Image 1 (cartoon, rainbow, N blue to C red):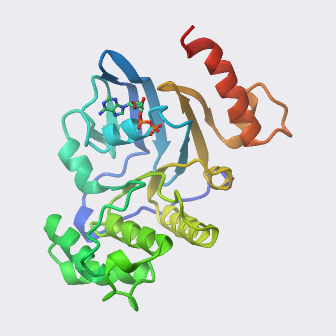
Image 2 (cartoon, rainbow, N blue to C red):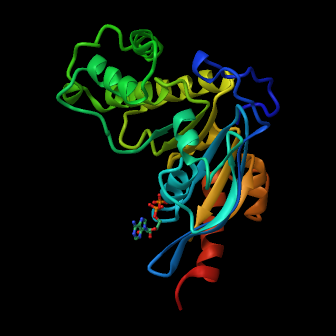
Image 3 (cartoon, protein in one colour):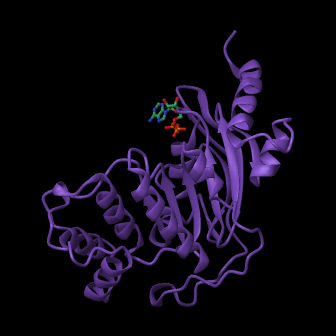
Length: 270
Ligand code: ADP
Protein backbone atom coordinates (compact mmCIF):
# COMPACT_ATOMS: atom_id res chain seq x y z
CA UNK A 1 0.00 0.00 0.00
CA UNK A 2 1.16 3.52 -0.63
CA UNK A 3 1.81 5.66 2.38
CA UNK A 4 -1.47 7.26 3.48
CA UNK A 5 -1.72 10.99 3.66
CA UNK A 6 1.12 11.71 1.25
CA UNK A 7 0.94 15.27 -0.02
CA UNK A 8 -0.81 15.79 -3.32
CA UNK A 9 -0.49 18.43 -5.91
CA UNK A 10 -3.51 19.66 -7.78
CA UNK A 11 -3.96 17.97 -11.14
CA UNK A 12 -4.58 20.93 -13.36
CA UNK A 13 -4.71 21.79 -17.01
CA UNK A 14 -5.55 24.80 -19.08
CA UNK A 15 -8.90 23.23 -19.97
CA UNK A 16 -10.12 23.06 -16.41
CA UNK A 17 -8.71 26.25 -15.01
CA UNK A 18 -11.10 27.82 -12.57
CA UNK A 19 -12.72 24.49 -11.69
CA UNK A 20 -12.88 24.09 -7.92
CA UNK A 21 -10.93 21.19 -6.45
CA UNK A 22 -13.04 19.32 -3.92
CA UNK A 23 -11.59 17.29 -1.05
CA UNK A 24 -13.63 14.30 -2.19
CA UNK A 25 -13.42 13.56 -5.91
CA UNK A 26 -16.11 10.90 -5.52
CA UNK A 27 -18.79 11.26 -2.89
CA UNK A 28 -21.94 9.23 -3.55
CA UNK A 29 -24.42 7.36 -1.42
CA UNK A 30 -27.45 5.17 -1.95
CA UNK A 31 -26.36 4.42 -5.51
CA UNK A 32 -28.77 1.80 -6.86
CA UNK A 33 -29.39 0.24 -10.28
CA UNK A 34 -32.08 -2.32 -10.98
CA UNK A 35 -32.50 -4.61 -13.97
CA UNK A 36 -35.70 -6.62 -14.29
CA UNK A 37 -36.59 -5.77 -10.71
CA UNK A 38 -33.22 -7.01 -9.37
CA UNK A 39 -30.86 -4.52 -7.74
CA UNK A 40 -27.46 -5.24 -9.31
CA UNK A 41 -26.04 -2.24 -7.44
CA UNK A 42 -27.78 -1.79 -4.14
CA UNK A 43 -27.39 1.25 -1.91
CA UNK A 44 -23.68 1.73 -2.60
CA UNK A 45 -21.76 4.56 -0.95
CA UNK A 46 -18.32 5.56 -2.19
CA UNK A 47 -15.97 8.28 -1.07
CA UNK A 48 -12.61 8.77 -2.71
CA UNK A 49 -10.42 11.71 -1.72
CA UNK A 50 -8.85 13.80 -4.45
CA UNK A 51 -5.52 12.40 -5.58
CA UNK A 52 -6.08 8.91 -4.17
CA UNK A 53 -6.03 5.55 -5.93
CA UNK A 54 -9.01 3.45 -4.91
CA UNK A 55 -9.08 -0.20 -5.93
CA UNK A 56 -12.53 -1.57 -6.70
CA UNK A 57 -12.63 -5.32 -6.22
CA UNK A 58 -15.25 -8.02 -6.28
CA UNK A 59 -16.24 -11.19 -8.14
CA UNK A 60 -17.55 -11.05 -11.70
CA UNK A 61 -21.11 -9.80 -11.80
CA UNK A 62 -20.85 -8.01 -8.45
CA UNK A 63 -21.74 -4.60 -9.89
CA UNK A 64 -18.37 -2.90 -10.46
CA UNK A 65 -18.92 -1.94 -14.10
CA UNK A 66 -22.47 -0.77 -13.41
CA UNK A 67 -21.23 1.42 -10.53
CA UNK A 68 -18.41 2.90 -12.59
CA UNK A 69 -20.76 3.66 -15.48
CA UNK A 70 -23.14 5.45 -13.11
CA UNK A 71 -20.28 7.50 -11.71
CA UNK A 72 -19.10 8.74 -15.08
CA UNK A 73 -22.58 9.61 -16.26
CA UNK A 74 -23.00 6.80 -18.81
CA UNK A 75 -25.78 5.14 -16.87
CA UNK A 76 -28.57 6.77 -14.91
CA UNK A 77 -28.95 5.47 -11.34
CA UNK A 78 -32.43 4.41 -10.21
CA UNK A 79 -31.65 5.90 -6.80
CA UNK A 80 -28.85 7.62 -5.03
CA UNK A 81 -27.21 10.98 -4.85
CA UNK A 82 -23.87 12.64 -4.61
CA UNK A 83 -21.10 14.19 -6.59
CA UNK A 84 -18.13 13.41 -8.78
CA UNK A 85 -15.57 16.23 -8.92
CA UNK A 86 -18.08 18.33 -7.04
CA UNK A 87 -20.65 17.87 -9.82
CA UNK A 88 -24.06 16.31 -9.22
CA UNK A 89 -24.13 12.74 -10.53
CA UNK A 90 -27.77 12.99 -11.54
CA UNK A 91 -27.96 16.48 -13.01
CA UNK A 92 -24.44 17.23 -14.22
CA UNK A 93 -23.42 13.99 -15.90
CA UNK A 94 -22.35 15.84 -19.06
CA UNK A 95 -19.85 17.94 -17.15
CA UNK A 96 -18.62 14.87 -15.27
CA UNK A 97 -18.02 13.11 -18.60
CA UNK A 98 -15.93 16.02 -19.84
CA UNK A 99 -13.72 15.99 -16.78
CA UNK A 100 -13.26 12.28 -16.27
CA UNK A 101 -11.55 9.57 -18.26
CA UNK A 102 -13.23 6.18 -18.59
CA UNK A 103 -11.31 3.13 -19.73
CA UNK A 104 -12.95 -0.26 -20.16
CA UNK A 105 -11.48 -3.72 -20.30
CA UNK A 106 -12.33 -3.85 -24.01
CA UNK A 107 -10.15 -1.94 -26.48
CA UNK A 108 -12.59 0.63 -27.81
CA UNK A 109 -10.42 2.49 -30.32
CA UNK A 110 -10.27 2.20 -34.09
CA UNK A 111 -8.02 -0.64 -35.19
CA UNK A 112 -7.67 0.67 -38.74
CA UNK A 113 -6.44 4.09 -37.61
CA UNK A 114 -2.89 4.81 -36.44
CA UNK A 115 -2.11 5.65 -32.84
CA UNK A 116 -1.91 9.33 -33.70
CA UNK A 117 -5.13 9.28 -35.74
CA UNK A 118 -6.98 7.62 -32.88
CA UNK A 119 -5.83 10.27 -30.42
CA UNK A 120 -6.58 13.05 -32.88
CA UNK A 121 -10.09 11.63 -33.35
CA UNK A 122 -10.72 11.64 -29.59
CA UNK A 123 -9.34 15.20 -29.36
CA UNK A 124 -11.86 16.26 -32.04
CA UNK A 125 -14.71 14.59 -30.15
CA UNK A 126 -13.80 16.67 -27.12
CA UNK A 127 -13.48 19.74 -29.36
CA UNK A 128 -10.11 20.54 -27.81
CA UNK A 129 -8.74 23.90 -28.85
CA UNK A 130 -5.06 22.96 -28.95
CA UNK A 131 -5.56 19.54 -30.51
CA UNK A 132 -2.08 18.92 -31.92
CA UNK A 133 -0.49 19.93 -28.64
CA UNK A 134 -2.84 17.67 -26.67
CA UNK A 135 -2.08 14.71 -28.96
CA UNK A 136 1.68 15.34 -28.76
CA UNK A 137 1.52 15.50 -24.98
CA UNK A 138 -0.47 12.27 -24.70
CA UNK A 139 1.95 10.50 -27.09
CA UNK A 140 4.95 11.67 -25.10
CA UNK A 141 3.42 10.86 -21.72
CA UNK A 142 2.72 7.24 -22.66
CA UNK A 143 5.92 6.67 -24.66
CA UNK A 144 4.04 6.38 -27.95
CA UNK A 145 5.91 8.95 -30.06
CA UNK A 146 8.02 6.42 -32.00
CA UNK A 147 4.98 4.28 -32.80
CA UNK A 148 2.54 7.06 -33.57
CA UNK A 149 2.11 6.00 -37.24
CA UNK A 150 1.47 2.35 -36.37
CA UNK A 151 -2.06 1.04 -36.90
CA UNK A 152 -3.79 0.39 -33.58
CA UNK A 153 -4.93 -3.02 -34.82
CA UNK A 154 -1.32 -4.21 -35.09
CA UNK A 155 -0.40 -3.35 -31.48
CA UNK A 156 0.13 -5.96 -28.76
CA UNK A 157 -2.15 -5.95 -25.70
CA UNK A 158 0.21 -3.86 -23.59
CA UNK A 159 0.64 -1.19 -26.27
CA UNK A 160 -3.09 -1.09 -26.96
CA UNK A 161 -3.64 -0.49 -23.28
CA UNK A 162 -1.13 2.37 -23.32
CA UNK A 163 -2.97 3.89 -26.26
CA UNK A 164 -6.28 3.47 -24.42
CA UNK A 165 -4.82 5.29 -21.40
CA UNK A 166 -3.44 8.04 -23.65
CA UNK A 167 -6.93 8.41 -25.14
CA UNK A 168 -8.34 8.65 -21.62
CA UNK A 169 -5.94 11.45 -20.73
CA UNK A 170 -6.19 13.56 -23.86
CA UNK A 171 -8.81 15.95 -22.49
CA UNK A 172 -6.86 16.32 -19.22
CA UNK A 173 -9.45 14.70 -16.92
CA UNK A 174 -9.21 15.08 -13.14
CA UNK A 175 -10.70 11.68 -12.41
CA UNK A 176 -9.90 8.31 -14.00
CA UNK A 177 -12.47 5.52 -13.87
CA UNK A 178 -10.67 2.39 -15.02
CA UNK A 179 -12.63 -0.83 -15.47
CA UNK A 180 -10.23 -3.78 -15.39
CA UNK A 181 -7.73 -1.84 -17.50
CA UNK A 182 -5.03 -4.50 -17.26
CA UNK A 183 -7.11 -7.64 -17.88
CA UNK A 184 -5.11 -9.97 -20.10
CA UNK A 185 -2.03 -7.75 -20.22
CA UNK A 186 1.43 -9.21 -19.54
CA UNK A 187 3.10 -8.57 -16.15
CA UNK A 188 5.70 -6.09 -17.45
CA UNK A 189 3.07 -3.96 -19.20
CA UNK A 190 0.88 -4.14 -16.10
CA UNK A 191 3.74 -2.89 -13.94
CA UNK A 192 4.46 -0.02 -16.33
CA UNK A 193 0.78 0.85 -16.41
CA UNK A 194 0.68 1.04 -12.62
CA UNK A 195 3.83 3.13 -12.50
CA UNK A 196 2.03 5.61 -14.74
CA UNK A 197 -1.09 5.51 -12.56
CA UNK A 198 1.06 6.37 -9.55
CA UNK A 199 2.74 9.24 -11.39
CA UNK A 200 -0.69 10.61 -12.28
CA UNK A 201 -1.89 10.30 -8.69
CA UNK A 202 1.23 12.09 -7.51
CA UNK A 203 0.14 14.97 -9.74
CA UNK A 204 -3.26 14.96 -8.04
CA UNK A 205 -5.31 12.70 -10.35
CA UNK A 206 -7.98 10.65 -8.58
CA UNK A 207 -8.27 7.05 -9.75
CA UNK A 208 -10.97 4.44 -9.21
CA UNK A 209 -9.76 1.20 -10.74
CA UNK A 210 -11.38 -2.22 -10.79
CA UNK A 211 -9.09 -5.23 -10.84
CA UNK A 212 -8.89 -8.90 -10.02
CA UNK A 213 -5.14 -8.82 -9.46
CA UNK A 214 -3.96 -8.89 -5.84
CA UNK A 215 -0.63 -7.22 -6.64
CA UNK A 216 -2.60 -4.31 -8.11
CA UNK A 217 -4.85 -4.15 -5.05
CA UNK A 218 -1.68 -3.85 -2.98
CA UNK A 219 -0.69 -0.78 -4.96
CA UNK A 220 -3.88 1.13 -4.16
CA UNK A 221 -4.19 3.69 -1.36
CA UNK A 222 -7.53 2.21 -0.36
CA UNK A 223 -9.88 -0.57 -1.39
CA UNK A 224 -13.58 -1.12 -1.79
CA UNK A 225 -14.74 -4.73 -1.94
CA UNK A 226 -18.17 -5.34 -3.45
CA UNK A 227 -20.31 -8.45 -3.96
CA UNK A 228 -23.99 -8.91 -4.79
CA UNK A 229 -24.11 -5.19 -5.53
CA UNK A 230 -23.25 -4.35 -1.92
CA UNK A 231 -20.05 -2.99 -0.40
CA UNK A 232 -18.68 -5.64 1.98
CA UNK A 233 -15.51 -3.89 3.13
CA UNK A 234 -13.57 -0.71 2.54
CA UNK A 235 -10.42 1.05 3.68
CA UNK A 236 -6.72 0.29 3.60
CA UNK A 237 -5.61 -3.29 3.03
CA UNK A 238 -5.11 -3.73 6.78
CA UNK A 239 -8.62 -2.40 7.46
CA UNK A 240 -10.16 -4.75 4.89
CA UNK A 241 -8.35 -7.71 6.47
CA UNK A 242 -9.67 -6.65 9.88
CA UNK A 243 -13.22 -6.21 8.55
CA UNK A 244 -12.99 -9.76 7.18
CA UNK A 245 -12.41 -10.89 10.76
CA UNK A 246 -8.84 -12.07 10.12
CA UNK A 247 -5.56 -11.47 11.93
CA UNK A 248 -3.04 -8.87 10.83
CA UNK A 249 -0.86 -11.46 9.08
CA UNK A 250 -3.66 -12.55 6.70
CA UNK A 251 -3.38 -11.65 3.02
CA UNK A 252 -5.83 -9.57 1.05
CA UNK A 253 -6.75 -12.65 -0.94
CA UNK A 254 -7.66 -14.49 2.27
CA UNK A 255 -9.70 -11.49 3.35
CA UNK A 256 -11.68 -11.45 0.09
CA UNK A 257 -12.33 -15.20 0.33
CA UNK A 258 -13.59 -14.77 3.90
CA UNK A 259 -15.77 -11.79 2.95
CA UNK A 260 -17.38 -13.56 0.01
CA UNK A 261 -17.99 -16.72 2.05
CA UNK A 262 -19.80 -14.64 4.66
CA UNK A 263 -21.77 -12.79 1.97
CA UNK A 264 -22.82 -16.04 0.30
CA UNK A 265 -24.57 -17.05 3.50
CA UNK A 266 -26.44 -13.74 3.55
CA UNK A 267 -27.20 -13.15 -0.13
CA UNK A 268 -27.19 -16.43 -2.07
CA UNK A 269 -30.56 -17.82 -3.10
CA UNK A 270 -31.78 -20.64 -0.80
P1 ADP B 1 -18.98 -6.60 -12.65
O1 ADP B 1 -18.43 -5.41 -13.36
O2 ADP B 1 -18.68 -6.61 -11.20
O3 ADP B 1 -18.58 -7.90 -13.32
P2 ADP B 1 -21.54 -5.73 -13.70
O4 ADP B 1 -21.78 -4.39 -13.16
O5 ADP B 1 -21.06 -5.85 -15.11
O6 ADP B 1 -20.58 -6.54 -12.72
O7 ADP B 1 -22.89 -6.57 -13.60
C1 ADP B 1 -23.62 -6.71 -12.39
C2 ADP B 1 -24.86 -7.52 -12.67
O8 ADP B 1 -25.75 -6.74 -13.46
C3 ADP B 1 -24.61 -8.80 -13.44
O9 ADP B 1 -25.45 -9.81 -12.92
C4 ADP B 1 -25.01 -8.46 -14.85
O10 ADP B 1 -25.46 -9.58 -15.54
C5 ADP B 1 -26.14 -7.45 -14.61
N1 ADP B 1 -26.28 -6.49 -15.70
C6 ADP B 1 -25.36 -5.60 -16.09
N2 ADP B 1 -25.82 -4.84 -17.11
C7 ADP B 1 -27.08 -5.30 -17.39
C8 ADP B 1 -28.09 -4.94 -18.33
N3 ADP B 1 -27.88 -3.96 -19.22
N4 ADP B 1 -29.25 -5.61 -18.30
C9 ADP B 1 -29.47 -6.59 -17.39
N5 ADP B 1 -28.56 -6.98 -16.47
C10 ADP B 1 -27.38 -6.35 -16.46
